[in-house]
Image (cartoon, rainbow, N blue to C red):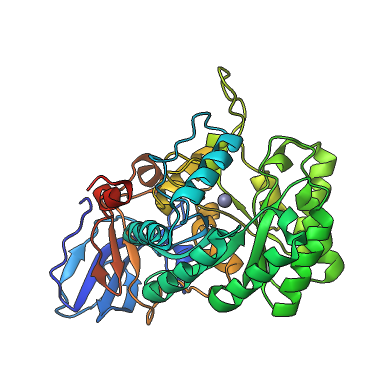
Length: 438
Ligand SMILES: [Zn+2]
């Protein structure tokens, strides 16, 4: 049996012989195979999971069955780091050098020229339809918040978040260089927009600028006053001297910061001398800071030089952070924009690529939290397991074990939300009007 599975549309039906990770289930179901999977029958009734039983041992009466034949069923994904406002601008703002500076320049030009409320709203809507179709239930996006763009984008964020409530839980964090934190007019603008339209999250890009410590003090102070969480883009650099991560962790510890902190990228950490790296990782663990790695985007941008083959995958010291007890996860980051030419807000693709780039295998199941439980924790979401009483939100794949899961894209997966199968991801042609193509 391969996906797509066929559903007759009955309100009460059973998924027969489904394969689920024991760690995604509330009670101990046996037997569990060497990869951590158990075979189950799942009864779905009017959009909710009514009952779960070991495969073949259930009595679900006359409920029609959908034969999953041992295929893997996953709970929906959580994508903790994206840029929905930049997405899908590649064709009008390509990055001729493919590197970080080329991306910054290309985005700045396109933003000034094209990012009207309609443009941002249309691309964000396309993103959410795509992520939803792929099986994502919660997303955090960063929002370029600089100059006049701040007051254009934030109302769009709020409208989009309201429209998608119940389907995708959308959070947003402002994005600007930490230097701008010292600009009072800029910060007044940020505070006003977050008060009106925000998600109680404040953020910035940190790097080795003279303004780093003063900027952090200003942002921590504002977050403490408001009860907001913090989210930083950190040390997205191959320069081992880039160590703003350590400064963030030290600041959080010194201030006894009570909110959640999520940091993304931290690329340079993996290139630092072992003693420095260890000291920073210990501080990150002590501060309770969560770390999100963006493996696809990092591998695209980092170590890119003309006419030279890349030697480094660009990712942070992921295993070492996890070993120290840090809440670690992976996420999409940019898609089809100057920072990353590819991507589709597909967390199964991110997981597959994460497994390959970061060696999130042996055992595979150990790392399953990086696409759901870990980002949910960092985002303050309480998502439960696959359990009776929960909405029947499930991603049904055609794979029967981890190598089948990660060997193919599973573009034909079936995503159930409230027990009903979703349609496919939107057609790229839906974006043509933005580029004057239709
Ligand atoms: Zn990012």
